[in-house]
Length: 265
Ligand code: IPD
Ligand code: CA
Image (cartoon, rainbow, N blue to C red; front, side, top):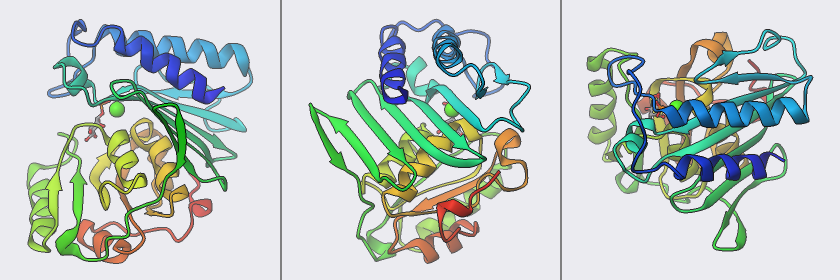
């Protein structure tokens, strides 16, 4: 259900790619298009029809009343990478994560520009459907910081000096640093072994609920994102390959969990 829903939602978003109507921004460098709203409505309605007892949290329409108590919680980002989407840059996705009893259980991302469907279920691995084939994802084996590429997300939610210090530490350690504008796809890149880490000083749960499980199920390491109110207020994030987990987390200044099962909100 979740895979089909994410793919349908991604196709809906892509139908307006290149002609998306920008609405008044939510904040400086925090844009929203009419399609962000439409996709979230589409996903919420489908979930509510199929699973009326479940709670939902989405980037655009917020949390349902039972968000803290429901057995199943769906966490939706209708378009992650909205700034890319609104500028005609083909790097954005739909993200749907499900927590079961507060622990990540399912994560699905659809990247409609490349028709890539990433999906993970707790204990069942991380997978990618692309070009009619399904393959299992695994994090990169790179074990030297000199060979590492790290995506560092950025927003105005934390001071500029703190981001510059983070980039400086990563560059100083020999890593290549990039920022492509979708935290969710940044996590998918780690799960697929294309980059060695994703780090950001603050990210929201809808950006990363699905991607964190992808990385964990692809054999990577993640931080305790949902601790201390991360679900509703966001938190720092680090997600890494296994070989460089300790040095990259130390450079990010964010401690790692040893297993995703520990990750409770
Ligand atoms: C943003 C993107 C960005 C990340 C920000 C997010 P949006 O989400 O994921 O890469 O650095 O923290 O807010 O606005 O594109 O949905
Ligand atoms: Ca987002």
